[in-house]
Image 1 (tube, one colour):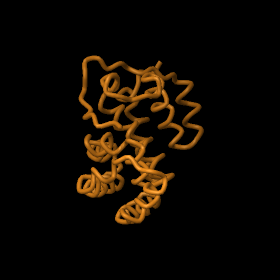
Image 2 (cartoon, rainbow, N blue to C red):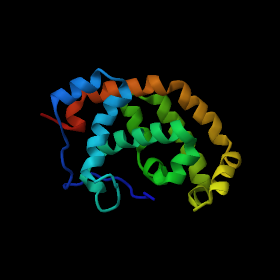
Image 3 (cartoon, rainbow, N blue to C red):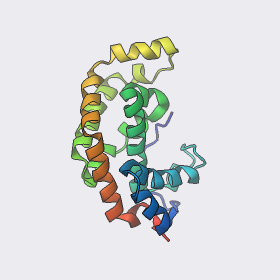
Image 4 (cartoon, helix red, strand yellow):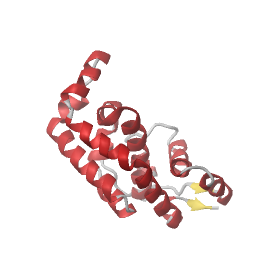
Length: 178
């Protein structure tokens, strides 16, 4: 599980993405555009973000990667799945919500702040190892996430578009464009 706070490091590297890749991704949907960047980040850490390689990415890159994890995990299984898959600390112990607000995704930011309150109050229970049966029972035990998930589903496309636009208008913050 990832419990490491993200700090900027002098060891960060700049991910390179070509203009051609950007042009192709922009022809697809907004999440594909975000994945262009985050796929490159994940490739740089060999698909295994951990304490030893966290410093390879900077704060902007981590924030965008965090949004990808939120989009995928909450979109497919809710906040319980996000947390059980080890992303709770990565999302909630870092300034993810603040970064998303800076990106312009204020509605998502508010949802993350509210989810963090539930996470902080129940962290030990939410992060414990579970059987499949116990995992499924957590959806009943933590129904307070349901409202936040519904809110997220309702705004996801709009907020993803806002984030993709921010990335596109600030490409140099997220990658070295070649």
